[in-house]
Picture 1 (cartoon, rainbow, N blue to C red):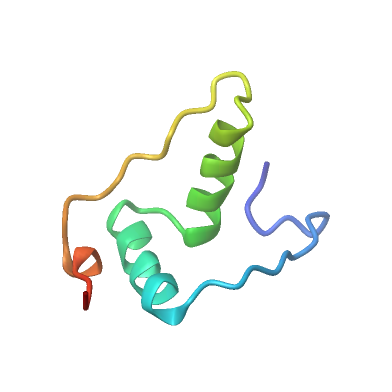
Picture 2: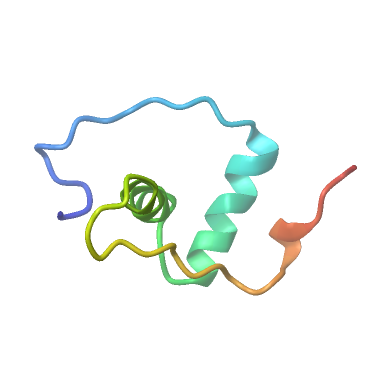
Length: 67
């Protein structure tokens, strides 16, 4: 599937900024986009043939929590 395909409708999800914004940095650290990582996770979750969990980046600023 081509990223940003004109035939793929946009989806909405509610994700807090304190997770969504660092997720962007973590995805970029792996040379990916948030959308690409989410699609990989969905394919893996549904057990699609050949689907694998995306590789996680090493710990970084996105790993810290305020807890």
